[in-house]
Length: 204
Image (tube, rainbow, N blue to C red; front, side, top):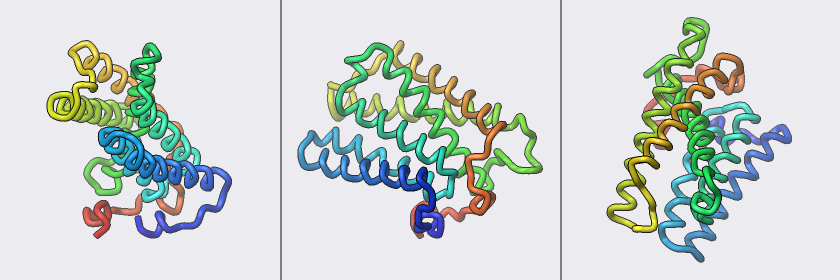
């Protein structure tokens, strides 16, 4: 992971992905200095998702896609677009969960917890595993939202219909992510199938 993270950008897409990561870091600093603490927390929460595609050596096109989606979801929350634009939250849950499910699948594959791609893995495996991963991520996110609404700020809106709708769109995003992994590789050839130790994920 260290080698992939420190690898200099070589293509226009790789430069673009790194620029988006820089925007994410600068945005978090700006939010910490000028916005509310909850906004700064949301911006900070996005940073791992922005960094992981580079750390995992994922292909530049997916790296750019992931950064765009993560930044859009993050700042839509800060600028309250979810309440201003009808169904915007559903679109973000669909796209965001799809992207995060792919990243999580690569992590699980590298850690040898669940094989998602590779010669010995059935091609249909992502069609089953990615929706499951997406639903799990959706459930965790809804728990975070509930905790925030209950103990941090009443400005966070949660409700039964909202929760179920978000999880349904997250699950659909997982299905689309599964189809994507059956048709395209999201890992660079020189980074694919590189095993991860648990310490790699925490910088040990």
